[in-house]
Image (cartoon, rainbow, N blue to C red; front, top):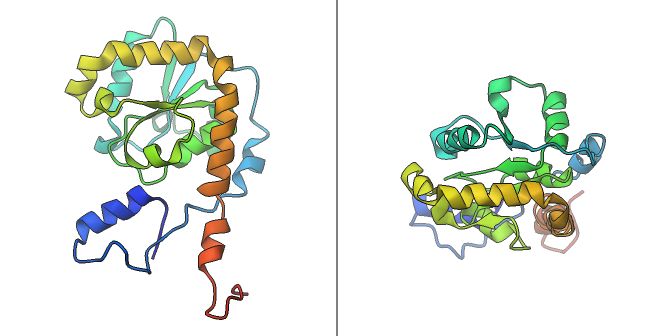
Length: 211
């Protein structure tokens, strides 16, 4: 059994408590996407806009209402785009991702998160909560915000000023985060979006790799 992250495993075991968490058939291997850096290299640009993207599916656990409230609060200063409402082609989405400064998440369910990885590849800051798979995957401490800020819409309203302050900081000091963003990208490339872990698990008993 192959899982993307430890959080993915924990969610699975929560649904099936009879399974031993130390079962040898549980393997954490990420999700092989070695092709993505080459695909996105053509849309990476230094000409960033004060643009925040919501790249997630339109589902309750993604808390779109938080993003829409932020869009209203900052409408005179920052552009907010819900990608699925634009009905973009993949090419158009990638082009927009390359121009944005922030990919925003208030997700209550996430076992890997391809969109924040794609954003990191093109120099777009991922603003993600300190929960779910994000906690184990983010290795710099610069792109996680406290989980309680968006644990619900009511919690968000209580912490709204802090969320807005963080967005403004990323916008105004974007260049200061690029070194850490590069560190994060390298970490994600090597540990979560590579086939390395999967290939290491797919070994025959004699130690030879599968053909």
